[in-house]
Image (cartoon, rainbow, N blue to C red; front, side, top):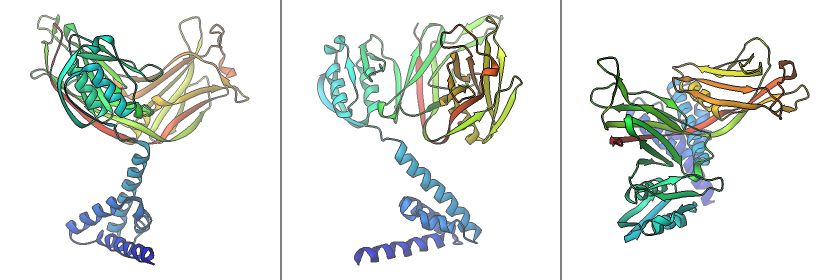
Length: 392
């Protein structure tokens, strides 16, 4: 009886909150919105019913609340929470600290022999993320990671100079500087998140003095050279100190996949897919006249959903099929984005048999099967490093 009474009171309270979505006072509307969202899936049936209300204010707000509740539930199901680490001690050896991180997270960390003697000094890391712990140990222990290997091991080796790194959530941004003002960077993903289907980034600001920001978008790694045109027409290298290096990144988790079937033709074909324009066809390469398949995609620049969908094509599985549906083995091939064209996706595959010698003719290909991500959630992270020094 008590449970029935509680349920009835909860329903009545929910209905009151729904009615307040159409209140004249904007503060009342905002508070009702926040309270309904905080209750999650328990109020989803009532909110979805309110989305069909004749009151346009209630209906619009209810649709937005329902969408955010569903996305939050999807995020909860797909995105693991970063593992937490506590390291407290005096005069700890680097290798021992790494073993403690491994014991607390279950991740495989293998310190090199040189780290069995290197000491960290005092450690006061309390309830930090795995990435934050690794960042601290790499920088203060003058170490660098190699891997992960196929079995999941991450080898940690001793080095003389600490690398700049920055941890956010499950991502660790590593910056590697070199002579001539070249800068490379990459991301390491916490092992529990390696199932993520994509990582996109944009360099929001990388400048020295009054230089214009450098813009780039791509996959898990980036590389560029900070050079400017000299007064006399030659190359003038940037100084050894980069004033600011800021990257905004998003990690994607796939919720649903969709299979697209493309019909090949010697002529170029176009396929429209949810805001993405796929263009595909067949051509001959310069090497021995081998037939090649080309697939490219473009998205509306002002539609973030379409741009994300285009980016996630890089995680697609592409198969060429014979008329009986049997997959054709393809050799070579590449899939990804051009750094100069962040809104363009390209794929190519040379159509050769499994021996890598005989070309496959276009007439042998009945269809192209593309398994692409159709629904996902993404998590944003921002990295901001200042005064990144280059090697001399």
